[in-house]
Length: 107
Image (cartoon, rainbow, N blue to C red):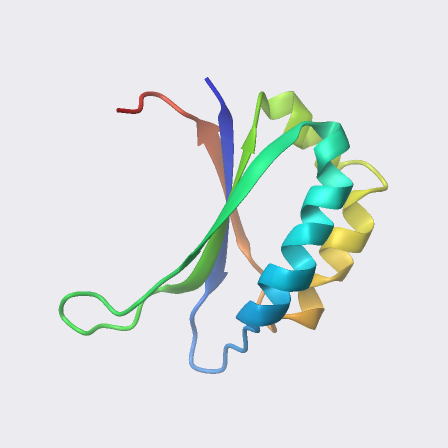
């Protein structure tokens, strides 16, 4: 089963997040630098207020799909990660939260 990594961007009072830049520049940069390390695909979610109208804790997230955790580890510790991490300041003023895990089951 594939290995999933989530990158969540906090939605705080002073958060700045440029979704246009993120989609058109940052995520293609991610794919360009990490595909050779085994990144299969990515998906981006933009969070909306809850049913009660509450502001979401996160403004957006990216899910990156890898064959195995070792692929992600190789990508994140390679020289190819430097431009990806260096680009974060170009679309947000917040540090992302990283989560990763194995897909257990799907329908």
